[in-house]
Image (cartoon, rainbow, N blue to C red):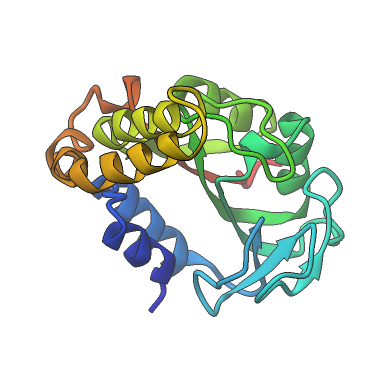
Length: 219
């Protein structure tokens, strides 16, 4: 299936907004030619995407750094970038690289944390509000086609509580057991994102935001 990772995420309690699904489907339906999944792997979101990562793990096709993509200018039909920008020390440089390698009229789909705890690969430098996400791509020259809440506020709350239990209070194995128990009993809480993630103000307190942007024909 084209959105295998998304279906796996849903099964795990990551209930994404309807708008983010529509944007993701639009991206996949409009991709033409070679398309990159930056930070992709170890699985493949779509057979139409080539995975680029900093290490050869799983189904990684191309080894490279998002700050300096090993791809010719204007040679890529689409770019998928999910849960990556928070791990980049210089996201402005990375988004400028996306703009460089994307063909005119090509789309980029990005999903990036807003309210998430630290998680390192190889490190974690920043999260983005919806407006910060928009401006990041607009400054690089992109036209933002659509943007909003991806993973909703209920998931954000549940994950933050899990992190506190696991990492800070109480410390050690007791915290890990409490965190696991909380994740189990919080399933009904996370399920409320079927409603809350689709509300107009969800982006103010959501776990991640999404963005669909195009490289305009005027450049």
